[in-house]
Amino acid sequence: MQISVIGTGYVGLVVGACLAETGNTVWCADVDQKKIDGLKQNVIPIYEPGLDALVERNQKAGRLNFTTDVADSIRRSEVVFIAVGTPPDEDGSADLRHVLDVADMIGRSMKREMVIVTKSTVPVGTAAKVADCVGKSAQYSFHMCSNPEFLKEGAAVDDFMYPDRVVLGVDSDHARSVMAELYAPFVRTGKPIIFMDIASAEMTKYAANAMLATRISFMNEVANLCERVGANVDLVRKGIGSDSRIGPAFLFPGPGYGGSCFPKDVKALVRTARESGACLRVLESVEAVNDDQKHRLFQKLQQAIGPELRGTKVAVWGLAFKPNTDDMREAPAITLIEDLLQAGSQVAAHDPVAMPEAKRRLGNRVSFAETNYDALSGADALAIVTDWNEYRHPDFGRIKSSLRRPVIVDGRNLYATTRMAELGFKYHSIGRGGTI
Ligand SMILES: NC(=O)c1ccc[n+]([C@@H]2O[C@H](COP(=O)([O-])OP(=O)(O)OC[C@H]3O[C@@H](n4cnc5c(N)ncnc54)[C@H](O)[C@@H]3O)[C@@H](O)[C@H]2O)c1
Image (cartoon, rainbow, N blue to C red; front, side, top):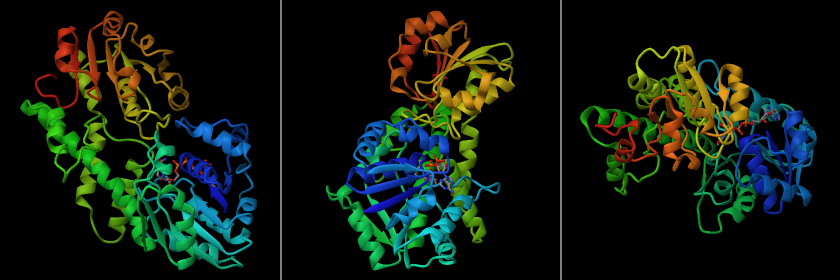
């Protein structure tokens, strides 16, 4: 099939490359000239395992093309995916400006009957708005499809190639059969394609992210309570996660959820509810709990090295909002670093891949270390924010000799508390009662 994917970010680039991998001819279009110039040279603008090989192979084979000429990519296509950003507006609702700009362009540029797919995460009713917008200038018939994306950054290629399920909200048999054909190669192991109406598909994406965010905030509150009552959240997590009604995923406590999706999607769903005269009380609490949790590591540092942090230095390991990505949108590390800087502390940070992005965001207010051990030199404490694999089995002797005080505040519970005590560290983790 001839396909265009408009918006070549984390989602659009993965979608485009994976659809090209199954033999389609794909045009990835973006308004960002620098990004497109780089992609033409196989320079991948994000860190995403496996994506570079996929882009290079398919570009070389002529199936994957990059362009800033959005209109031309639409003219060539029978299916167009809208994968532009939907950042939060000032009131928390999803800003649909980019989506509707693209819709307008589709209406003016299409040259045949098309299926128009909203891949961006958009509130219920957006596909209808897109259809209205396209319809103003369209000369050909078109069909709408809402196809929310569930990929996880850091495992995005695998998630797209081997999805748990594909959700497709459609408004016609034509859209249904085109989309079923397009996705057939990705569901050969029997994973379901779930067809539904468009509004339900739009809601499914928000409900999924809201549920996952809820599990995280719930476990963070349980962890904080564990600390007070002397229980160990790691054991509680295993105890409840082995219940088949609950399951083990997304029960890890930590420094609060971040990333480009959970924070904005929770906000947007809360806003949708408010606009429709309802109130999602659980979700409003999920957000409030998360906002507090993002300050938890700072509070633990104050407990560990004293309430007055002015003049201290803290080493921070991990800047990305999770491992295997360089995405720092809403990352808990940003909250911690801002808290530390405001308190007059110096910060020396390390991340295996997110340092260029961190430099862009934080500038020279923070010093960036080439290795994780370099960050420790002369620091009063080490704070671990992201659970990168390389931080799991460090050289503890080296850590202890580099730090001015043997203090570790671990937002990811990477180490055994007994071992850390034996090694002589003052080790503060999340929700492991009796050890803070
Ligand atoms: N990042 C994720 O893990 C993830 C997962 C599932 C769904 N989503 C959703 O997918 C959507 C895209 O997210 P993302 O993380 O890829 O965003 P992103 O910010 O990484 O990329 C968006 C891209 O769209 C481009 N763009 C903006 N306006 C444009 C226009 N008019 N024409 C062409 N290109 C334009 C931007 O230049 C940018 O490259 C969002 O709605 C997001 O909520 C994201």
